[in-house]
Image (cartoon, rainbow over all chains, first blue to last red):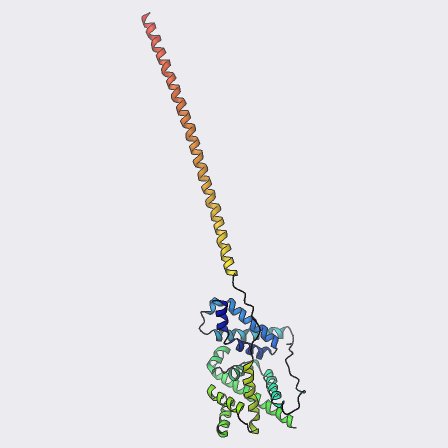
Length: 169
Length: 140
């Protein structure tokens, strides 16, 4: 496979890899590095890749494993993820900015979710994957995916309602 | 879409029993229409999800052209050719040396044979001499 051909294969899902990596690693730079690494790994395994009929699922799986490994080693090494893409909550009090404010709240709320819930929510509500695909990717049963997703959605909603109420008070 | 319907769908949404299509309907509703106040949090959620989906990976990926494997195989081939070359070259050399030695020996042997022939010729003269000598003795 040639370089351009490879890039065409990868093009439709490279953003998905990045978004999943960012959801897990939070930091933009870390996510970019992770995605880059995954794509380079795929490229070096190029010949093997043609054997997989679903390259996207394979790449997503690689990304998931890579990010979880990284998080684990970070935890073990007692390092904190450093990232600068937090928005300052206190900057905007005006009404126009209220919407974008609550959007960044959601991001914060999702950061606090357990990893499994984060991934399920990301894959379903952002990437719109089917339950079966998510189940296969995360090595869970479809029922477990459903339960996790329901829990994640409820948590996000509840926390959001809380924040809204604090905002009013 | 009717509010009633939306609320039902939202209930299913929280239980995670909606299909992707139904969720797409919700997303459309909450990103386009004026949303009643008690559903405001859903609006933020669906808006966030749509925005999150827009995020793009923009970093360049430096893909090295994969020459390495070729070079590896070429070097393997070169080394094997070299070894074969040395092996066969040496045996060819030996063969040539043996051939040369054989030719030399043959030459030496034929030289010897020729000289030996000369020797017997001379011995023939000797016999002639002997015969004449006998004749002379007999006459006396």
